Image (cartoon, rainbow, N blue to C red; front, side, top):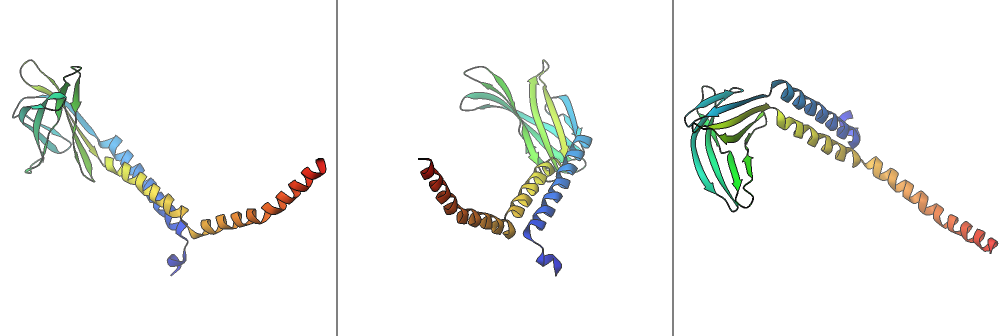
Length: 190
């Protein structure tokens, strides 16, 4: 029964503090357990990172509106399981400037993010590929969101609205007195 009678700001504070804990957990796990590998891959090659296998299945040429790209099809599976996603990173060259860029493919989940970036072609027909596994990276954003929601919830507490209303009413009552005093003082000076 006591929890029901607690002010809204209490619940906002609790939610914001849970957000801080989630944020810290996300940062701690990402910095401690993230894995990254730079490898050279040919079609059919497989690389394992963070408990996941990435197999380069195909490379295709893609014409975009202002670029030409090489797109890789990479199957992703947990080690010992069937593939659950196909990631498609690209290496783009913009036609106007001949500027190359890499478009990273991202596979997101609450528990981890997988990033795959296609680098440069090698002389033997392979490609350099960078693979990242970042566990709990989305917890960082989730923690920040919980903190913001908790803060908004706390600010909407009825007590703050009443206090603001009282301050406004106090100022409103004192304004005419101030104006009269100012007018009388300015008349005396003239």
